[in-house]
Structure formats: structure tokens, C-alpha cells
Length: 290
Length: 160
Image (cartoon, rainbow over all chains, first blue to last red; front, side, top):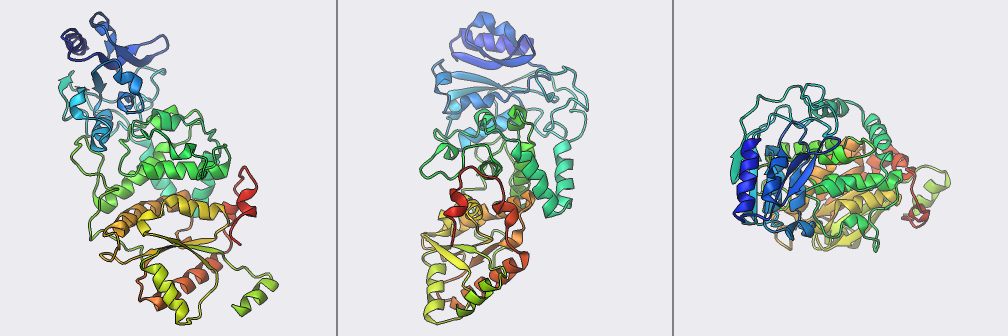
């Protein structure tokens, strides 16, 4: 923690950056913090409650962030995949941002919930994490904690769903998606949802019904999942932001699995790794095409 | 076809199938099937697009919303794309989309993906007949059509 604060203070004092985006202790729990003054650097923390993926503030949609000057962002390994995604899709120049990686032993599900990291409180993306030590960062701070406890619930739920009948899956999803109130929190929190004008907001023609009814909700969530194919960093912020507790990561994970099985693509911290949608191989598998 | 009216008369189910095809290969192939006077099922409504790369998965969602029971997506064989690579991109996209539909619980048998070249009129006939038979056996896609929606336009303005 001291190491992170020292580094932030140095970067702000010597004018390397105008803002360090990290986390601070708020009244109810951990929250994102935009540190613009060297004397405030002591407020920066990193604990298992630092859940938020701060890479979302690097999205070109958030022009007000860039007005603060050059940005330094504190990232966990998973968040760093989103930074790489933005660089890969030319939404961000790597040299325009200072990436401060923190070694991470897992975070909890809820930044406002219990602070202790156990098998019950661990965020779903954490067990089995392969990026506890972020790569391709400008700075790397902290000691490497032990691996996260527990097991992935989404992966288990996904394989159970796959074993059930199509009708059961349909009933499951219609029930889940019918809860959606179309608040767009999943989209707003997502670092990869950077379109200035979202397809779902267009009305002429209106491809996706904007009011919250099962038909429009299904169209929206299918489209959102499709647009995440090969792009989702797997940070799980959409699911956390969802006020209706829709298991959105199930969809993201399914799509990620197809992408991995079909073309061997895995979400990566390296911007040079080509995205699977938008590129192709001439001999891609095509058993489903007559 | 002439017997179509009789089928509807005795209330048996005739599926509505929407085909999204590329203009260079499959549309021309379907045209050849027509000029060759090949007899085939008349359940398919063709929507012609420049390329399979132009076919957004949303088109398929919209087709189901508007009353389609099945969907065909067809274009040029690999290496034949008029725009060099559109069908390769489509192939990747629909690999994901097909699995996603299946995961949501939409029967993958309602979707047909094919490559039909301009000279393959008979293949187009086979695709149309096979898909129609398959979807006819599956029955109307009421699960999707009955999803509660907002405006009434979807069904009223649907495919006739």
C-alpha cells in the first residue's frame, strides 16, 4: 500500500500524470478515487474490496477524465486485459496512459460487503486466476498474495445449464432476462462498451426494442453478448452493476468459451494479440455450414 | 405452389422461413433454381444482401421477432467471396451466434447455414426443402413469437 502511495505521489509531484485513478476507503466501503494532488496520495488503497475495473475510465466516452491530464490507472491483472483491449481496438494509445499493476490475490464480490476474502465472498472471476501478477505494466507494486480461495460458480452453473434441455434453458433465460429493467448499467460500467452511440439507443431503424419487455430484453442481451465475443475482459463488472442480479457473466463466459474452443483465443493482456472477431483463418472450422 | 392453399385450408402448419442470402452467389443460385423450373417448397422468403459479411445476427433476431419459424443464412463458398473475405468474417460471427442461440435455448435446427454458389441451383432447392421439412416438423416457433413485447406492430407487420 505504501509502495502504491509513494509511486502515485511521485508521479503527481513530478508532473508525469495529472491524475491517478485508484481506490479509496469510502463511508460504505471501497470506491474508485481520482487522485489529482500529491498530498492526497495517502488515500489510495488496495485491498480485496478493490473490485471495480478502473479501466472503464480510460474509455474514449469519458472525455472528462482526459481533461484532468495524463492518466495513471491502477489495475489488477483482470482489469489490465481491458486496458489491452482498448489499446488493441485503437481506443487508447498505450503511451497516453501510465499503467500501475498491483499484485492481487483475489477480490470480494461486493466492495460494500464483508472485507474478508473467503470461499463464500470471493468474486467469481478470481478462483483459478492466471494474471495475479499483471504483465505489460509500467509499474508493478505490492507483494504477491496467496491464490484466491474457492471455486468458480459460473463455470459450474454453465455446465449444468448445458446439460439441461433446450426448453429448460429457454425457460431459465426468459425468466432471468425478464427481470431486466433496461437501466443499461451493464453497458455503462463496461470498459469495452465504448461506442459513442450505442446500437440499442438508435430508433431509426430501431433494431432493439428499448422498453423493458421480454422480447426487447432478449434482443438486447443476445446482442450485448455477441458484441462481447472475443472482447470481454472477464472482469464481471456488468454482473456486479446489474441491479436485477441477472447472471450476465454466464453469457459472456459462454461466448468466451466458444471463441476459445473454435479459434484458441483467450482474453489477453497483450494488445498485439489479434481479436478473433474481425480476423479469420481460411481454414476455420465450419462443420455447422452445409 | 398450388397445393399450398389446400394445406392451409385444412389448418396444417406451414412454416415461415426467412433466408438472408448474398447477392453474388446464393441469390444467383436461387435465381438459377427458378429459371431451371426446379420445384421446391414455397415457404422461404428471400432477403438479398450484398454479402454474408453484411448479415448482422440482429437480422436473425428480428426475423424471429417478426414471426419467422426458421432462418437460412447462405452465401458464397470460402475463397469465392466477391469482396474477398466477407464470408470468412460471417463464418466466425455465426460460429459464435449459433452456439449462443443454442445456449439460450433456441433449437439450432431452426437455423440453416450454407454455402450455395451461383451454379448450385439444385443445392439451393435441397437446402430449402430440407429446412422447410425440418422446421415443419419442429412446429411454429411460438416460444419466441409469444414473448411479450411492447408495440403491436411486430406481429401485425410481420412476414405474410
